[in-house]
Image (cartoon, rainbow, N blue to C red; front, side, top):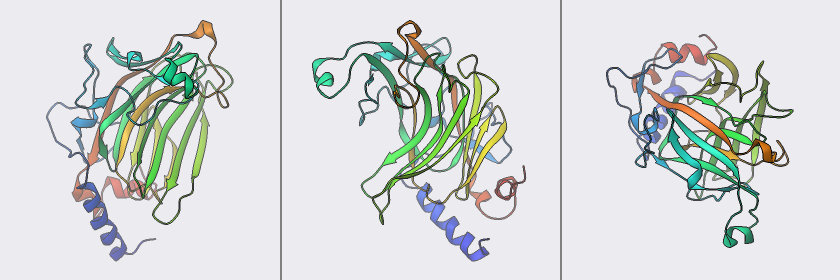
Length: 286
């Protein structure tokens, strides 16, 4: 258990980090409320209802600026669309240009969306449906700084095959100021349905003390937050994962990972101290 002095020191650290390179929460009437209790304010810069047909380039990159994709599939901006009230990330059977082929890409194109802003702590919720094919539909956070590189995987799910109902969650540390060594904390949960059959609500609660995963309002994993105190970008992507999920069959392509909405909330700074819903959940009370 942390002493009160330790809590105050951590609170100061949290507030300092929150003011650096992160977006600020704003309160507005009529904004949707999260599925969990707490004194929240929404972060519009990291929220999107994906209505209409325009992709909001003020919030998102249409392709990961620093990553070409997981081989053999390459990320293609053409595979990212907003239509039917959803953000759609499509995987296709498609050959790359010669430059990408020389770097090991072939046969498939996929898609990635990355936030322009970073965020530190909060509650994040999306309503989404996985691709109906082999391959990964993913929602995750990361940032790769020279001295610090961490990642939180909300989910990596496969829509078809032996793992079509397996919910994969992970925490990664790739590099810290003290050690340049990768390690991770993986967890999986079996759902009573296929993730490609319908939309489901996926949530992540990220605090200085604990990280908690939700599916359709139920808690499915809780981990102590030992290392994930770095502002991170928010990411969606579709990827080929030959060694884990297998490559998609030709007759299953194109297949699309659809996100109905993404909503981001941050706790009011007053909740970092004292008693309240946030502290109660840290003790396991909901």
